Length: 285
Image 1 (spheres, helix red, strand yellow):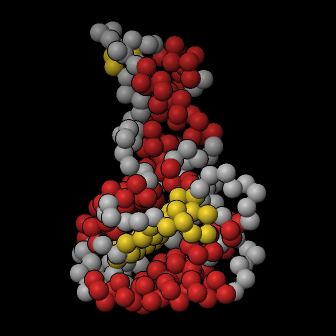
Image 2 (cartoon, rainbow, N blue to C red):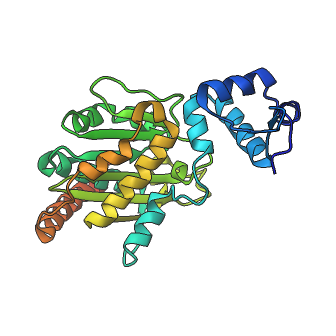
Image 3 (cartoon, rainbow, N blue to C red):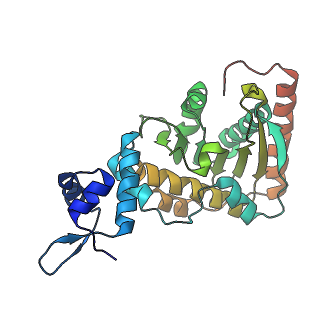
């Protein structure tokens, strides 16, 4: 029930009354009910959302992004790994080290450069420093992509010219502990997803273990793309707007599945083999 006055809400959230009025006027949030006399009345749910927005603002999230994230419907899937397991129940997770995941990611990216026409390319990097190490590579991917988006613990959303859109993700979403790479195009579709196994503080970076799955099934890849775009839009609406609709303009991958799988598998095996022979790089990727 909406029975809290603006003063009571301000006292409970630490957000000033003037700020609450400004948010309502400028951003359309919150939307209190009104009494017959025109006084604002808020619900306990409003208080929860205002507190969340205040926390996200304190950590640097843009106001519109903070509101979009707070209003994101509860229960919405923000885990690529979970989405893939749901779409393709037969996928068998493999326990792999980080250096092996890097090699597989390189294979998917290079096959995209070789076979995909104007793909949607999306990825999570956990940490900004991991992305910065491969930023030039992603500039190449973005050059011919319909859309390229990377998510990590960036300090703020950014849309650099001729580069992937950089979207910050909150520290409490499942994607923070996931490794995800999605390429969705008419002639090529692939997705790699992994979650980091806990309690590896003492493990060297390149030896950190993940539980990984991958697929080239178009429906599963499209669902993974929607999960990532949904989270990106919620955290960077001023950059992405209605980007989710862009996927509707991408024809589903209809290439010969056997040929595509063979090409990608051969590339993966070669990259993993070379990575296994070489010493793991010292710089995090």
